Length: 253
Image (cartoon, rainbow, N blue to C red; front, side, top):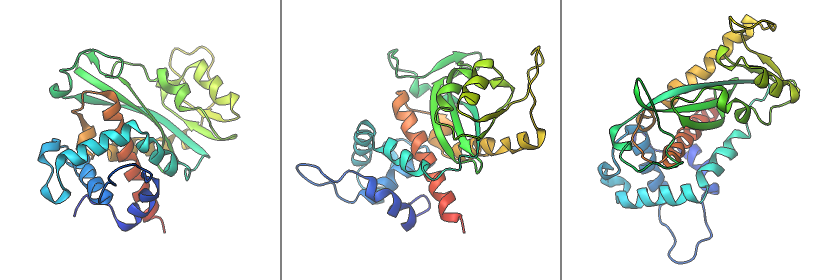
């Protein structure tokens, strides 16, 4: 079917799924995962899951159980190992929060902010030169980009080039990049007294991080946030990123 895993994608994911489990063994993980990816891409409620994927409760429960067990983190870590560390780019993108995601008591897990545009969540991403996500974070929508910059940029390769827009033009961000042996290529803000050198030809490559967000928001469950818990929404962001990674690898000659 349209959103189902290919044989290649399944061959990468299957070894990373849990196997050692007491009691009844879960059946047909591939069918259940296809159902989860259908919900992710279509943006539909779990109850609308087509019958060909089995009971919606099975897909919903397994998605949440594996999220709590760190399976989605493990998948993300596995595919990220193939990233190109020579060029790195960071940026963020706003996602509107649906009214269905706002009816929950306040907690530190929500990652929902309020601004003139309404309720929003911000996705922060670091990608490689091919626009494949290396590290992801979410915050309330009103959070400044610099808030997550240092966490996103941990573990840079020595001599890597980091491309970012003027929103990341902060002394602490530049220092964090240089402390790891990397080079920032960030335009200067108009109010900066001491300017830094940067190359426009390299900066043009920043379009790859914008392309990543465009691909990410093709998954309708991410383009609009319907999930009340930040952890649930972030798990969907991770799954979409894994799919983007696998499609990129599969299409590489």
